[in-house]
Length: 219
Image (cartoon, rainbow, N blue to C red; front, side):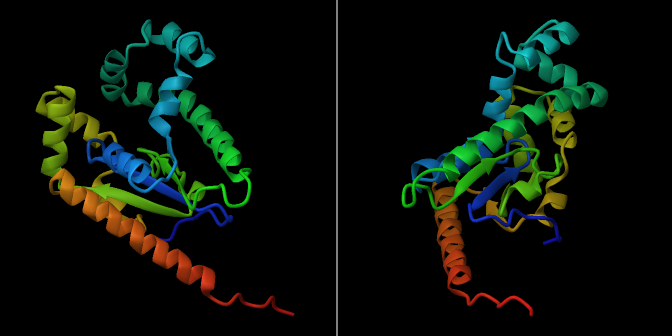
């Protein structure tokens, strides 16, 4: 794992990321429904930021004439400059929502706050948001699986799917930066087992850190 900044506060924040169509949403659902962890979803926040009537939506309509997500996808994935423009518009709004939601969770009464919060962020590394998370989990699969899943899910041609994959950092690069890798190379039942094992291992590691003696400050 390469050295990169991490959140050092008392609130445990699991950054959940991966490549497009590697299975982030499925893992997020497992963490929420099977393990009781709240999931803050960057994609949901982005959709809400572009809801009709918002300032961001008006800016998008003025530039592209549409708020249709598939239509916008064809535009921005086909033109890096347009993708950059849209990201510069939406990312600060998404970051603001994360800050608001994390503050709300941190302010819950003692004993009512969750043991960890999941921040599901597809472009976590690309956007430089490592410092928002205390640890980062990467949902991983083989590249040929990623391509096939994306083509099937979005109804894309191979060239279109490859274009969207190449718009993000490659999985090979992200593997070097993650603290934990969640393999999604098998079936849904196998993925559930992998996620449960990751949660158990992470809880054990957190308990060990909490029990470790604190260093006395230097005189």
